[in-house]
Image (tube, rainbow, N blue to C red):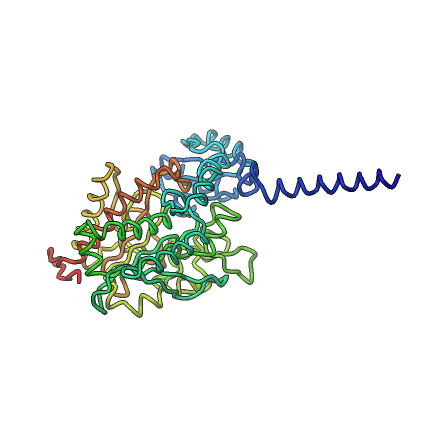
Amino acid sequence: MALDHRSAFRASLLLACVIICSNVLCPVAAYLYNNRYAGDQVFRITPGDDEEVQVLKEILAHMKVDLWQPNSVSLICHNATVDVHVKHNDTRSLRARLKLEHVYFRVFISNLQKEIEKQTGSRSSRRRRSESQYDYEVYHSLEEIQSWMFDMNRTQPDLVDMFSIGKSYEGRPLYVLQLGKRSRPQKKAVWIDCGVHAREWIGPAFCQWFVKEAIDSYQYDSGMRRLLNQLNFYIMPVFNVDGYDFSWTTDRFWRKTRSKNHKFHCRGVDANRNWKVKWCDEGASSHPCDDTYCGPFPESEPEVKAVAKFLRKHKKRVKAYISIHAYAQMLLYPYSYKYATIPNFSCVESAAHNAVTALYSAYGVRYRYGPASTTLYVSSGSSIDWAYRNGIRYAFAFELRDTGYYGFLLPESLINPTCTETMRAVKAIATGLLKKCETGRDRFPYI
């Protein structure tokens, strides 16, 4: 009898070990994000007139949805597409209501979980970790990116210097790479940040690509050699480190930072609405649960405060500010917060034109370009407006691929072409900095 009990105990212990191994140690068939997006869909809705706009605003205001484009219900306008992520429980009712109101829509993604599995499934995970050589054509976690930054700093001492400008809300270091030949002490500089919004993974992928391409081509590309000899590039691959990490572990479509709010359970601030320029005005929300929440005060987020402090300190040398976002295929410049023309419009417009032309030359992908307020939408407290107001006369925000078919789930197979074409555009902007611009009334030299 005692033997039977011991056998049963051993059997149950073995079974428990198998279950633990299969679910924890070897999650071969486990779903990403605990299968939380199964059955969720992404709708593309196109209201045809002002009446349909009002109807759509009313519908979405009474549903818990995740707006992809635009990022606030208040920004919906007629003949502009609205991309919205809808939970599986609400897809049927939204479909019925839109049909009833005769508002045109298409379902872009019919099962969001499947698309996520495709983008970051086991294949890419194996490629990411099994090869000794770093793979720039897959998405990388924050830990992997920071490890890569240390490797770059260690293996490329002539061109790369790594430093921290502060710590995030959750205490993570905010690392920046200085890229450039150490030829003279006070070189002019270009700032590039990626990953301001956590879910826009193509951003950090581009920042890494830029560093790799610049270093690899330094020996044989005279244009790149000239840029790195005459300029320093400050590259911040992941601006919003807490949010980016959270988008890998918990919520793939998280946008904001991860700071806590004492009055609400909602967390985070939109790091591109938290800058001290027309703060919390049109295009930003004062409600902590909204994706465009501006924060309790300007520079409330330690990530924003750290970058602003660094740029203020070096503003005499930083001649261009570039922020990489997704998605829309646009190149934007100030103003974001108002419909007005910047003083050096001709020079900036010319630089933007040259950049999108260079980008187009790679694969024929077309980007729209212009002031952010008229090309995309009005938004206050943005980084490009802040940079411009603080004396950085060439401030740009890229919205990378695509225009909505994949949205934030741009496949890894498109990292290479997206980064290749964007590299051409950024090089065009940087090359323009080495020349003087004197078009019309704009008498600002680039440097």
